[in-house]
Length: 211
Image (cartoon, rainbow, N blue to C red):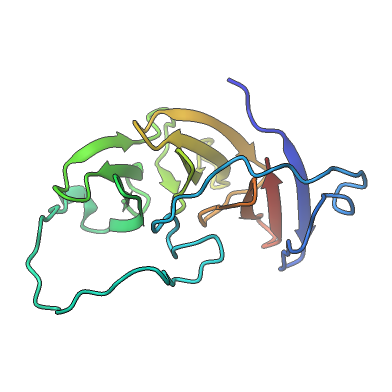
């Protein structure tokens, strides 16, 4: 399975920055033209905080006329979810994306639900690791879902991380690439790049840009 090519890695003690770059020259020591955007982001709530800038604001959205609304559907928690929970992280016209957390005892999962009925269309879990896998909050870009994963696969108390992409249509995993250090937050996908902040054992932050 082909994996994306790492284009840049910026490490600094306690800080990370990536702004105003039209190329990756200066980060890598070589000139690398910025690629054309390879994704068309939905105009809905595609990120946990609406957009890649994490503004939490949807200027085009309209509020209900009254708060006296009826519940359209409910999704009861399973017994194993009591210490975790569900978080709605993104919505498009056709899909409600839900992050299900289990606080380290079971594999996290991502659910795609029908926004009208609440029916589960597909569920994504790791299914391969021997140790529980935790996901950062996934984001939607184009026809894909991007998320980070952390697991102590070696069982030595030193977790490893990966960046993954799955199909928004059916939840099929399209690919994954290992990260040098675990990432406990969701990625940011914008402008043809996927940005991931990682943290190593010395609490240094790194910013990984992938195209």
